[in-house]
Length: 596
Image 1 (tube, rainbow, N blue to C red):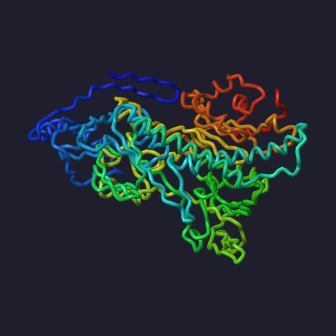
Image 2: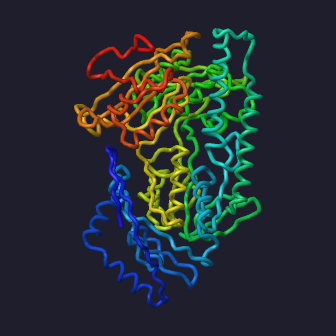
Image 3: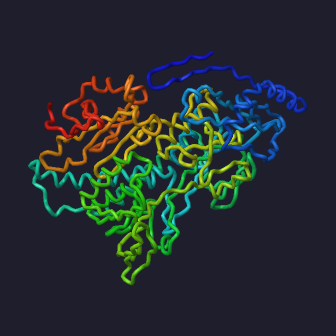
C-alpha cells in the first residue's frame, strides 16, 4: 500500500510493504536466493547499473560465521548469506520523490550468531544517537570510541567533537564574548558599569571544561542505563563482520551483524615547516592553559571566523588569513557582509594570503612568514598563537576499510540514500560521509532514522536538503535552503527573484551600535507560486530566528504567504515578513522607519 502526499514544495511517498524472511536449509539457501534474485526485471538491473557510477561492488569474499541462521534478502536485491553481491542502490539525495520510492533495507536480527547485532564505531553525536535508538528497539549494541591526543596533548571524553571541542564550547565562548559587549552597552541604558571590567581566560576555560566534563559523565551514565556497551578502544576491521579493538590493556576481537561508522573528522594541519610543532587547532583552543593573546587565525571558514570573533570580543587581537574566499559554500553576498562586519569591529583580514612557515622565537612568540598569492609579496609578523582552521579530515585511516571491502572517497565514505556503503551491512552517518552537511543535528537525526529503519520497521529516510545552520560570528549569520548563487545555477537567473532589505534592531539604538550590516533576503521563484528557495539573515540571535523559518521553508513557504504573515513587533525576525523590495527593482532596501 502506498500514499503520496503533495504540497507546493515537494512530494513524499509513504510506502508500507510486507517483508518476508526466507528460512532455508544450508543446502537450499543458494537456490532460494537465486530464484528470488532472478525475479528482478532487466529494466531494474539496468537502472541499478546507471546509478552505480560512483559505487562499485566489493570483490571481498565474505565467509559467514555460524551455521544456524536465516538468509536475509534485502529489498534492493542484495544478500549477505548466499554469495550474491548486488551493490546498494545509489540515488541522488536531491531527488526526494525518487529517494522515497526506493525500497528500504530491512534487517533480520540473528541472535547468537555474533557478539552484537550492531556495533557503532565512534562515540560522537550521530553514533550515540544511533546506538541508543537501536537498543530502544531491541538490538544488542556496543559503541567504540577513542580520541587520539592532539600534537600538544589535548584529549577529551565521550561525546565527540560537538560536546568536547565543537558546538558547545564554541557557543559558550561566543556567549562570553557577547556578555562582555553587553556589559559595556549597559552604561548607555543607565547601568553604572566599572570601566575596569575584563575577562579572565583561565576562569572561562575552567567553567567551560567543567561543563563539558559534566556532559561526558551524563553521557556515560546514559549509555549504561540504556544498556549500550561503551568500549573505550580504537576499532579497525579484520573482515566484514569482525573488528579488532585496541584497548589500554590489550586487544579485543568483536563480531557484529551490522556496523555503523560514525568516526567523524579532525582538523587538518597545513604542510609547512612549524605547523604541527607550534600551531594549534580548535581541538586545543577551548582548553588552552594560557591566554591566546595576539592570534593568527588561518582559514576563513565558519570555524575560523567564529574563533576570531569571540577572541576579539574577549579582548584579544585576532587576524584572519584568507587563502581565497570567505565562508566557502555559503551565499557569497552574505559571507562578504559577515567579513565586513568583523572588519568594522577591528579584526584585520589578510586577503589572498597563504602561510609559508612558523618559527618559534627566543621569547616564545611565533614568527609567521606568509605570501600574497596575487602579488607574490612575502610578509611576516609575530604572534602569540597560531590557530589552524583550514578544513577537516575524515578519520578513515585507522579503520582498515579494505579488510571489510568498504570503498572510501578520499577521506570520506560514499553512502546511498539508506546511509549504506557498498557493503550492504556496513553503514555510515555524520561527518564521515561524503557530500553531506557536517552538522551535529544532521548526524543525530540520520543516526536515529537509520536505527529505526534497521530495527523498528520504519521507512523514513534522512532528508539532507534545506538544512538550517548558523555561523556564530559577532553579528550572527543564519540561513536555510539555497544560496542565491545555487538558486541561479539550478533555475536560471530569469527565474529567480531576490527580496531583500536592511533593518535596524531596536536594541541597537540606545548604545548606538552599527546597523550597517543587519540584512535579510529571501531567494524565491520569480513566477507562479513564488516558492521560497532560501532564507538568509544577518543579525542578532540568528539561529533562534531562522529555526522556525526552516520548518516553514521545508513545508512549502511562498512569498505571498511570507508577506501575509503578521510579524511580532518589535523583533528582528519580523523583517522577513516585511520584505517587499527586490534586487531586480533597483530600489533602495534601507528602511526609513522602524514602525511603518
